Image 1 (cartoon, rainbow, N blue to C red):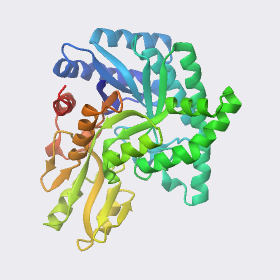
Image 2 (spheres, helix red, strand yellow; image 1 turned 90 degrees about the vertical axis):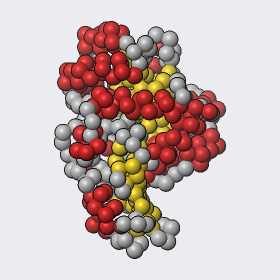
Image 3 (cartoon, one colour; image 1 turned 180 degrees about the horizontal axis):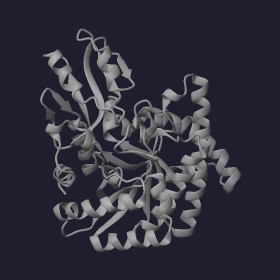
Amino acid sequence: MHLGYCTNIHPGETWVDHFRHLRDQVPAVKEAVSPDALLPLGLRLANQASIDLMAPEQLAELQAWLQETGCYVFTMNGFPYGGFHNERVKGRVHAPDWTTTERRDYTIRLFQLLAKLLPDGETEGGVSTSPLSYRLWWPTPEARQEATHQATQHMLQVVSELIRLREATGKLLHLDVEPEPDGLLDNAADFVAWYTDVLQPAARTYLAEQHGLNVPEADATLRDHIQLCYDVCHVAVAYEETETVLASLNEATIRVGKVQISSALRLQFDQDAQATYNAIAAFDEPTYLHQVVARMADGTFNHYDDLPDALADFDAKTHREWRVHFHVPLFLERYGLLQSTQNSVTEVLNRQRTQPFTNQLEVETYTWGVLPADVQLPIGASISRELDWVKKVMNV
């Protein structure tokens, strides 16, 4: 099992800038949490950084640094294409989406790099990616259906490259699709429905035409190369339960490529509703999307595109609970009147400890720079504390 952290916490859209931050921050984390063993890293490369790193001399420099520092890359984060720090991201985190060749080509480049970065003897790795597109860009069911079809075809073209890489290198590489609130794949249930109703039929046709595979061979190839990125924060925001999600995946014979270990905000309005409202308002910041799913008094759910929309629509008489897509530190269960979805993280980690369902675990809290000042800690100390907390929960 690989347990590391995602470098999307470190800025840098070019490789030179991102590498500078890695060299500054990673050695201290390595010394704190893994002084006597290799430290796994989930590498996040922006599009420009991925282009830069294709240069042989740049890649060789990274490989030498990883060996000297005692680290290795076991997975990559290919969700944010570019512009992820120190600017307004919001819905642009999905752009360009899977309806474009830009997203396809960027992802193929990441896999080509991952095949070279995986350490000797390690034959499996994944790249996590966006949930096809951002739902709000497609206003009608017909438009969403067409976008889903186009995105699916581009993903299957990536599968062709993964087949080629497996034949050339012996490495099994998988695209780990990450459902997110307001994505075309909003939650794990959406992912399973898309996989079984859209992706699998399209893959049988595509893989027969392009690679001469029969149905059982096509299904097996698809299981190998397109898997789920189980983001614990996103699952919790959707009010999905760990065992329900895993059971649905098992029934559909879909694998979990990796777990992104992250925690969301959770708040209940059963006591001092106004004070609770004021507390969550302090987390309203302009950089990232903070989708809200509200559980109403009648048991239904209201979905809000971003935290300001939920704040504007709040009604203490009808709103009972909010789950907010805001990655908060794993090791904190409460923030005054607010709670986190730490229980969901603990459930997933305990399930992984007793009945493993993946071999790749990646801590992914990237919002340190936009947290309220009273819960911020230095980046290196924060990463180390999160990894230590996960190890304690898993007893490793």
